[in-house]
Length: 222
Image (cartoon, rainbow, N blue to C red):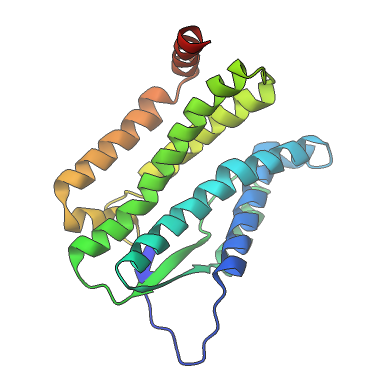
């Protein structure tokens, strides 16, 4: 998500620290949720933490960086601020099996044009779609290179699914979500982004589709 902000004189800000907190918090929460409280004392938690850091942490960080870089490209002052309270809440809720991701947001000032604000907003979900497609093509490449462990199969399936859903979820057309700003800028762009996300999250996000597509690619290039 992206919002407008005002920086008070003398206020310090370190994007690296803020992004690191968001990465760590969302990864820990996602790992706890996928592992389950009963299995937290097992080696499975380390495996899931690694997967969460790649799939979940990377997905949120790239989403926010996309907002920030587009805003800065328009000459705006833009910074990411982690939401410490919600990061702690998300970790706490993870112990109940509920995953809620609210790592923070990119705050920017100096841009008032709805078109530019819409482009800043759409950059986040678009980054998730690109990352989802990266995971989709990664597995057949790894397979053809001889890396055929089931862990990488799970990683790529989770990476595609998670990022497709995050991109689509952020297009909710209301409140602080990116979708509200994209819709205010361009209805056609909003419709295309939702259609792409729905296709990826509802149709492509099925095991039979993964296996069929990956099998076709491996047979074609392998």
